[in-house]
Length: 147
Image 1 (spheres, rainbow, N blue to C red):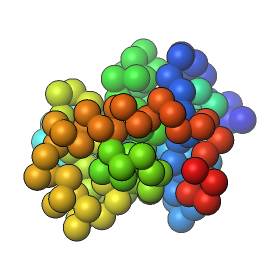
Image 2 (image 1 turned 90 degrees about the vertical axis):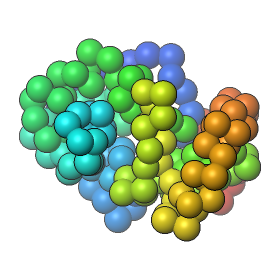
Image 3 (image 1 turned 60 degrees about the vertical axis):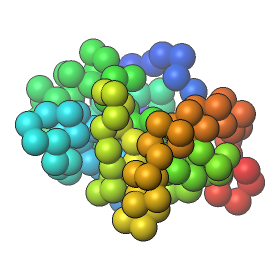
């Protein structure tokens, strides 16, 4: 556990932690608030500006963004714990790549890669509906190997 500000709410489900990113950090270390600011281009966060949300660390590019996240984490955290939104529509966990994303109706969705995102973009509302239905049944301790 870090020395970051801690926020807890009733949001549940496994959070994707990229093994190639910072250890134990969500969104591969990208600033989750940056997707909603300016032109929406995601930027890398820094350990200097961290917040622990439901026992998972998130990094931010500024104290201001960290404070925004701390005040309302569910508004900024990626849907489905940062797992691929298209894969979740099929009831499966897959890594979400923070470079392949869309903000839809004020929510952040990540996709596995460009090819998967191109498929997801063909029916975003339908895939979101299916993913929302599948997400509650994913065990909190699910991994790519035991789902």
